[in-house]
Image (cartoon, helix red, strand yellow):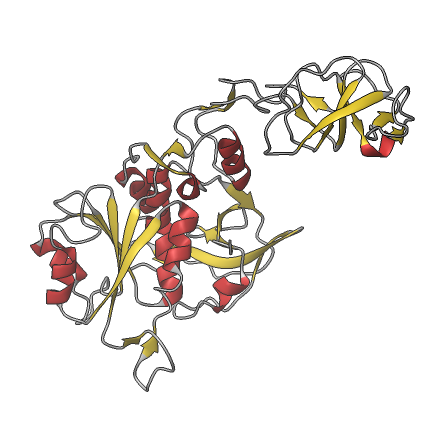
Length: 397
C-alpha cells in the first residue's frame, strides 16, 4: 500500500473516543469537549490587592482591627475614619473604600487620645485613591462566565484556571489505551546483550511516542517467539483487544520463520487492513482489526524501521481517537538524499533557515539518525526537488 494511503487509512480506523469526566491531573494534554465555565466568581469576595490598611472615608484613620488571608473577615462595617490592617488576598471589610499600602502609610498622632492612664491607640495616614487596591467580587471572572470553548487544549495554565473556578474534574476526550507486546527470543531488556542477542530499543521509545500522540501505554508484555504466546496475548478479552484499544506488536510482522503475526491474526479472524507499506524503512508493517473491535499495529523488529512504522500507522490512529490531529508542515530539503523509484523514504532531518538538513545515520537497525533529528522528511517516489512534508518527531516533555 502507498505510504500516504496507509497513513490515512490508519487515521480512519480509529473512531473518536466518547468524552469522559476525569480528575484535573489526568486531563493535561487532552482537549475539552464542553465549554469551561466559572462555578464561582474570581475573586469570590472583595479582597485586598496589597498589604496595608483597608480604610473608609478620609484620613487620618483609627486602626480598629486586622484581617489575614484565609482568616475570618472583620465582623463589622467600617465607618468613616476607621481602618483595618489587612493582608493581600484577605477579605475587605464592608464599607472599605480603598487599601492604603504599608509603603504609603505614615504614623499619625492620635488626636484627642492617649495620655496618662489611657491605652495607646494606633492611627495611620497617607494619600489614597478611592477604589485603589481592592479587587471587587467577580472583577476578574464573573460567575457562570465561559472562559474557554470546547476543543481547547488542556495546558498547565488551563488546569490552574479550572481549579481556580471551582472544578475538580474536566470533560475531555480520553486517551486511547495501548498495550505493547515485545516479541523475540533474542531480545533482552537490561544490561549488555550476549552474542546473538539484542537490547530492546523499541519498547523504551513507544510510551513517549504514544503519550505525545495523545494515548497512554497501559501495559507491556514480553513474549517468546512462537504463535502460541502471541495468539494468547491477542485473544478476545486480552488487554488491548477490545473496542477503543490498541495492541502494538514489536517484531513478528515480516515473513520470516519467526514472524507469526500474520498467521495468528488470520486464525483469530482479524480483518487485515494494511499488510505492508511502500516505505523505507519500515515496509513490513501491519494494521488489523480484531473481532472484539481492538486494533493491532505490527511493527518491524529493526528500531528505526519500527519508529517509521509507528509514525505511519500508530501515531495517526492514536491522534484521531484523541482528537489531537497534527498540523501539516512542508519544507525545502537542504541536502542530498537517496530517492527510491517506487517507495516513499522517511529521512531524519533537522530544521534550519535554509530548509530540512538530512542528518545521516538512517539505517533501519539504528536510531542514531532519529536521535539527532527533530523531524522525518517524507521523500516521495521519484522525488525531483519539490517541497516535502515533515513529520515532527516526539521531543522530551
